[in-house]
Length: 78
Image 1 (spheres, rainbow, N blue to C red):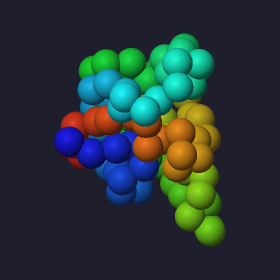
Image 2: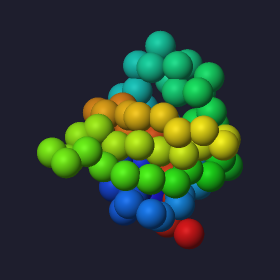
Image 3: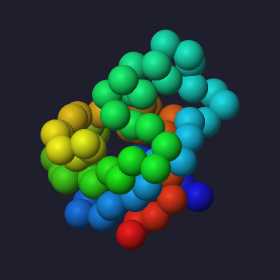
């Protein structure tokens, strides 16, 4: 098991759940954005300085900072 921020650019991982340290309001926000269990997420690109990264989930792209992506536990990459 890994976190979403550890996924390499171009790889796809499957969301499992959120870490225990994830604040409830952050969990709710990420869930409403489509980061739900069994959702495939692809890391599209990373900023030149390394943070943030762009992810594709549910047909759209969203930018997350590593501190947010570290809360998302996933399986993969596929």
